[in-house]
Amino acid sequence: MESIIRTYHPISLDEMSGIKLMNRTDTKFVTTASRLRQLLVLAHDDYRVQEINGKRIARYYTAYFDTPDNNMYIVHQNGHVGRQKLRIRSYVDSGLNFLEVKTKNNHGRTKKKRVDMVGFDPMNPDHGIRFLRQDEQFRQYDEFLHKHLRYDPTILTEQLENHFNRITLVNKAKTERLTIDSALCFHNLVTGKDVDLTGLVIIELKRDGLQPSPILGMLRELRIKPSGFSKYCMGSALTNPALKRNNFKERLHMIDRLLSTN
Image (tube, rainbow, N blue to C red):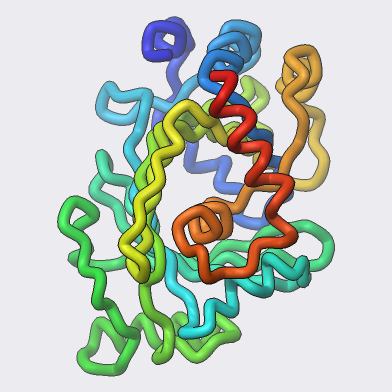
């Protein structure tokens, strides 16, 4: 993988600043590492790769929060619109950490709000974070959450964490981003169970509205079809057997099938 993306022209973080897509339409695709290598060869002439401090594959860490009865998971599993997620997202190599609220409305558009998570260390994460007004910094988080989150932040606790590597491609017109996540591993903070999905690849096309996209034809050529994949929900379903998963069974079977052919 590294050898292929080294042949791409780079795009810097500064150049990426105009492609935030904070109010966007997302389309996800799930495939294997071997099929990804074919896609990267096809996409070479139409995309640039994000490079930060000489690195083109970035390490990510995420911690997800939920209510004591896993309402954020259940709402998604039941297919309700207007759902939300709360997470800490860490860009490990850049040293950037954010507390994020993601809201998906009934038109399929995702809005993301975030604030700096000061002092958070993804290499030694605090698993006991509670959003109580114990100091000035947490008052800032409390105000942020009361403004953007529909849940009572004081009852939320960390449920699941993951690690993965990300390649970010930008089309040469700078109208879209393509994130490619691999080496995905989960750890459930409630059950203690770990799941390693190395070999599975999650591709996400992020664009405002329905802008034309060069990658869609390449994905069709390789028979990589759109498929919903929530890292929080899939990770939770795979690591917590107490959770309902009826509506995720097809995707869980797809994961097994892809991993067996990789």
